[in-house]
Image 1 (cartoon, rainbow, N blue to C red):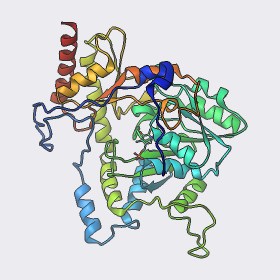
Image 2 (tube, rainbow, N blue to C red; image 1 turned 135 degrees about the horizontal axis):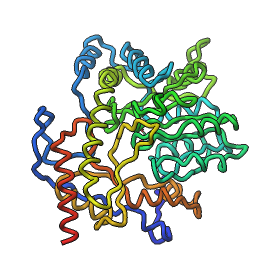
Image 3 (cartoon, rainbow, N blue to C red; image 1 turned 120 degrees about the horizontal axis):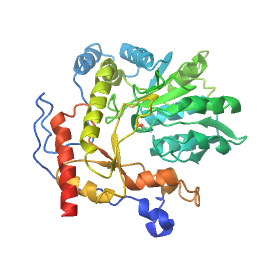
Image 4 (cartoon, helix red, strand yellow; image 1 turned 135 degrees about the vertical axis):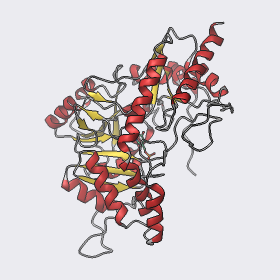
Length: 413
Ligand SMILES: *Cc1c(COP(=O)(O)O)cnc(C)c1O
């Protein structure tokens, strides 16, 4: 039987102090009802939820009525075409989720055991796992303190003759500084895969993420800016990458004989039902991005008045889409991150801690033992994100900020 990797906090040295406490239990509270009639869930404010306010039901109904519900059908092609176009990419390869889209895109490069892939340590586990699924080794890079993204200035020092790819992650919706990263990649002949799972519609120097490297990977999980329930997509401007990804997605059936497989393929297909939702969601992308940016601006205006809160960044060259509205608590703030989370949970407000870095994960700790990434560790210790859904109202945001003020008042009384 598979055994879990047990990592005891006492065996982590001083890294133990960055590991968040147990998840607080959310308590019901009475909050203002959404005046636009969103589902009656306002006794809690969730950290995120989907907005299904467009053609979702119409398109799903059409898929059912025409009997096309599996992994062929026109919605898949329409979804791939419209989404890729909005990301500024020539091709889109829709698949089952954002983890397998990373795996699929990486698989097209032919990497395997002995090869290295550079990733940020401050990311969601799927970025590292996709590399490991192929037998390759993730090589970690710290974040830079302003945008919280992978510190591009530290990447070149991590390149070895075995480096085959770099995965910049556009964390929480803020793009990575791609020009210098692409220059390093080009110099060393390394594949660049954007992990854009959190950054649908974000822009870097006027160009949309998803078309800034050799390929990009998106997730359409329920809490992402666009959702299909579960889903993902590889976008690329490279015809060779797109063709191979379409083939690998579908068991790598060959054209010469159907049951004849010349590549190790996968079943990573998406269904026409999911793509129907995805097409309807993609039609509303600009609306979702505008809502999230508006919400973020309102949060920032209100939170600036509370000492000790660092609000999320936006570089001069960036359009941040604020997948999650993240804040970092500095020394001036009277509560620890976990204390604030507990206080908000008591008031019916759901939050999430920032990522726990890859080198602190039970499954990877031994592999990276002794390596330190101070910026990522500090973000893990002091960061959390607040409710961030596209359908959040101004009243919701005011409720969240008022609750933070109450927690501060309680702590300083
Ligand atoms: C959500 C996410 C993924 C994984 O997407 P799934 O659809 O949940 O598999 C990968 N990378 C990052 C950075 C993510 O936030």
